[in-house]
Length: 456
Image (cartoon, rainbow, N blue to C red; front, side, top):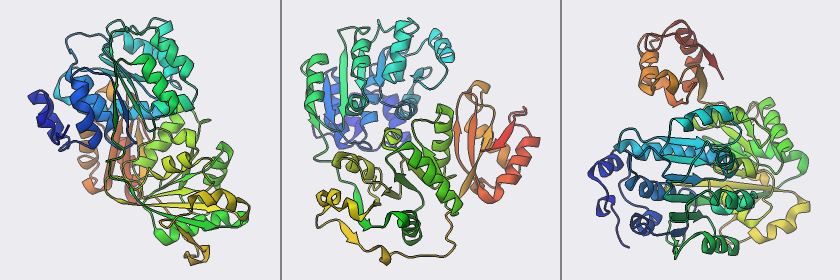
C-alpha cells in the first residue's frame, strides 16, 4: 500500500476534516500499511514501536465503522497500564471530534469501581482499559460486550510481560467470536505469534519498524564510583542542560531515594513507581508533562505506557536488565525527528554487563569531561495550580484561560498546559506568577462560580 495521505482512504468528509484540523497531515508507515486492511474489516497483527502512530491506526479504523446511534459498546481496547489506557482514550477522543456524542470510557484499576459502574449504566461506544479491571466489570455484568465488533490489544508484548495472559483469556470468553481483532506489539515473539493464531483469523502481518525513521539518539556511557553516581548525574544535567529528563532505576526504593537526594541538591525531581496510588501517579505525570517538574525518576514497570511527546534526555542510572529494556528506555527520546540524548552510568564491577553495548556509534567517555558547576540548580519553568472542578462541572480549558487572563489579569504567556479531568483541573502557571494566579483565582470565579484552588 503506497497511500500517503488520509484523503486516499475511504473515510467520511467530516473525519477527514477533523484529521486535518488536529494536524494529521500524512500517514506514518504503520498507518499507510495497516489502515487500508483495517478499514476492510480484516484482522491485523502489527509490529510498531511507541510513537509510530499506532493509536491513530486502530483508532481511525474503530471510529470509521462506529454506529453512533447504537449506544452499545462496539469496540474494546486493552492496554497493559493505566497510563497507556488514559493516553489512548485521550487520543481517541481527539480523533472522535468529527461526530457528536461519541462516548469513550476508561476502565482501569487503581481508581474507584463505583463511578465506573455508574458511567457504564449510561452506556458507551468504546471502552479502553486494563485486563484486570475490564474482567471485573464483565464478571459483575456491569460491562456487556454482546455488540462488540472490534477488539484491540495495544502493546500486547508488555501485557504478556506483566502476566496478563490468564485475564486476557478470561476476557475473551465474554466476547463474540465473530469480530475484528487487531493486535499491536513492539516485538513479534513466538508467544505473540501463538496468541495471534488462537484469537485472530487469517491475520495480516505488518512490520513497519524496518521502514520507520529511527530515533536520532546520541548515546554516552560513563564509568563511575558508586559513591560519585549522583554527582555524575548532576554533572550530566549541568553539561547538557536538558529541558526535561527521565532517569531509570531498577527498584521502587531507589526511585524515592534518588528523587529525595536530587531535591536536596536543588534539582527538581519526582519519582514514579508501582507503589504510588493512582491519584499520586496522575499528579506526578501531570507535573512532568506540563513543565512543572523537570526530572522524573522511574522504574521500568511504572514507565510502561508513558508517551512523553518531547523528552530531551534519558539516563540509565542503573543498567537496564536486558538489551530490549535498554532500547525501550532510550527510545523515549529523539522522537518526531528531534535529537535525543541517552546516558548510562556503570561501575567497575559492571564492566562485563556493558560489553554488549560497545559499538562505533556509542561514546564511552571519562566522566571528568563533564562540567561541574558549583551550586548548580535545575528548577521548573512552571508550577501546577489545581482547581477543584472539571468536566462534571462543565469546565472547559477556555473557561479557565478566560478567568486567568480576564478577571485575574495574567498574561496568556504565563499560562501553560491545561488538563481537565472529571472533578479536577490542572493548570501550568509560570513559576514567577503562581502566587498571584492562585490568590486571584481563589478570590475570583470561573463561569460565575467559585472553585477551591491549591498549588500542587
